[in-house]
Image 1: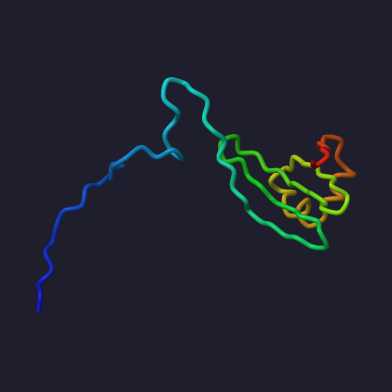
Image 2 (image 1 turned 90 degrees about the horizontal axis):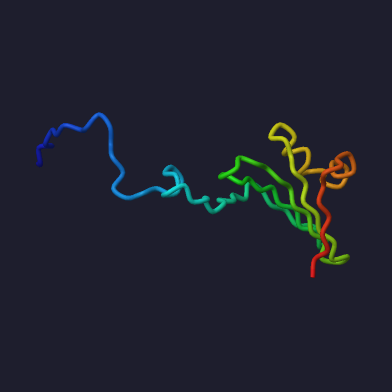
Amino acid sequence: MTTPIVTEIPLQLEPATADSFLDPAPDGAALDPVIRELDHRRSDGIDVRLLWNQTDDQIVVTVSDAKTRDAFVIPVEPKRALTAFHHPYSYAASRADAHHTLAV
């Protein structure tokens, strides 16, 4: 049987390498956006994504329709994110800042 060895653990651990999620860009350079997909669904050619820009702390819902080749992006308040994700067309109709694009 092996007897465990007791070691002291430092009160604060130091990272071994730079962490792009925690460390700011060197020399004031702009950070590349870190986009996280929070949710995604596809039905009848309509693709809906709930995305979080971790760098700017902004949430958007993107919608693209493969049949009509129409697409748009809706900036969303965090408390309305799931409503916009589940009902993007009605949410976009109630917002003036939805950005319509034409997919190519």
